[in-house]
Length: 195
Ligand code: HEM
Image (tube, rainbow, N blue to C red):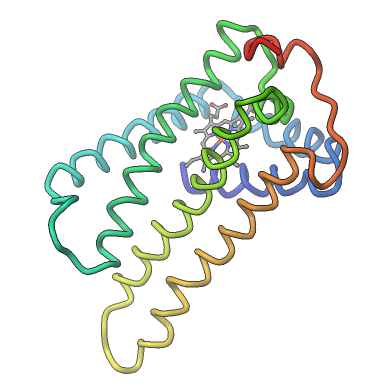
């Protein structure tokens, strides 16, 4: 469930390549499903379970011990994703509940337009998408099993999600920062940053 949401979520952000209006129209349609109270509760429970199961796995892993680089990549990308998920979902819920904001594209873009927060938000979002690609790529690579016949397939299974994620992350960050087209963030979204 979380996987499907995240896929739709990232496609939603990429819809912004056709302009903010396209992003907002996509979000309105997608929200009809994921903002349904029953679906949203299940989604948030899935996110919590994902974080908890990841934390349990990381407790067994020895993060700083010598390990094959792919294992390290899987551990560190999982750790980042877990931390991101906690901060991100808390921020979205606080945006809605505390600041009474409609958490649209402008909510994500606001931090990029008040100095010095862009220095935080560009790596924060960019690395989240990259970590997602790396984490899924490592899992696919491991699950394909190591036989001489699967060597190339396993390499592709690791590299393609990472490459796709790096491109998607770069595009989303560039869009939010206003590098692809001019962006005017309404003042109510800037206010929490003191902007
Ligand atoms: C560039 C990357 C991302 C941006 C700009 C972003 C932005 C947003 C925004 C604006 C919302 C509010 C949506 C709404 O109100 O309808 C949201 C919600 C959410 N995001 Fe992200 N997000 C990003 C990446 C991710 C990733 C990688 C994950 C998961 C690993 C994720 C998980 C979630 C979840 C679980 C919610 C809560 C959905 C809800 O209950 O309404 N996001 N995000």
